[in-house]
Amino acid sequence: MSAGLDDARISKGMRTQMELRKRRFNEGAHQVGWKVGFGAPAAQKNLKLTAPLVGFILDRAMLSSGSKVSLAAWQKPVAETEIAAYVGRDLAANANRDDVRRAVSAIGPAIELADIDCPMDDVEAILAGDIFQRHVILGQRDIMRQGARLAGLKGRVTRSGHDVPVPSDLETNIGDILNIVRHVADVAAAIGDKLRAGQFIICGSLTAPLILEKDDSGVDFALEPIGGISVKFAT
Image 1 (tube, rainbow, N blue to C red):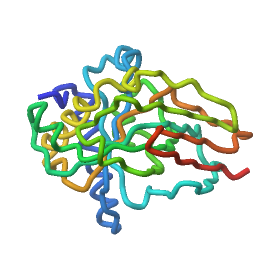
Image 2: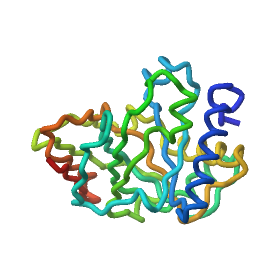
Image 3: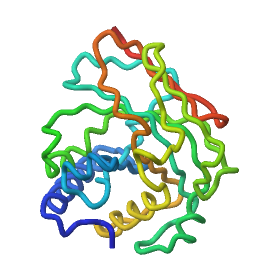
Image 4: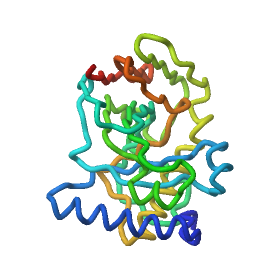
């Protein structure tokens, strides 16, 4: 399987992450999705990874488009513009590509806000803290693109009103979306869970992560022609 849990850094980090998730569940939170991180080829090479790292997303992390977020207490805030893959049916480990394709019921735009609060080369610590996850904004989902069909899609990103280049091939920095979904299903199974119908996966940053500065006013992301979303930052 592709879970990579034979890597001691990953197995230890995931055990701690699951303890964190259990505490959040005990506090009344519910899991709504999954995230992957460090999926870009350069990042995987630097960290000696064979697949992206996987974390969880809770209902309390979700924000609506246009929300204003204060970053005052954050250590190193980052925004990432991503594709969200929506899961329409449970997906078991070791699924074949056709099963994975059938499981993806829609795709749409997403923005993740993260706070880098540990060393970027410490895989165990990164996983233990749920890969810096803080908030997620989701946009419209396009059910006509079930199976993660990306043909004709174009990403447009602006940061504080300035354009950020987005690769024309949206999988350049994240890899194949169906492989990502299959990998998350494998990891979920390896930790005693499953990738469930109704959940979503944010599949990694389409651009280099946007390290936010004090004067940044917001990030806008359109996944055309599906639609756009935004987040604003309090000064």
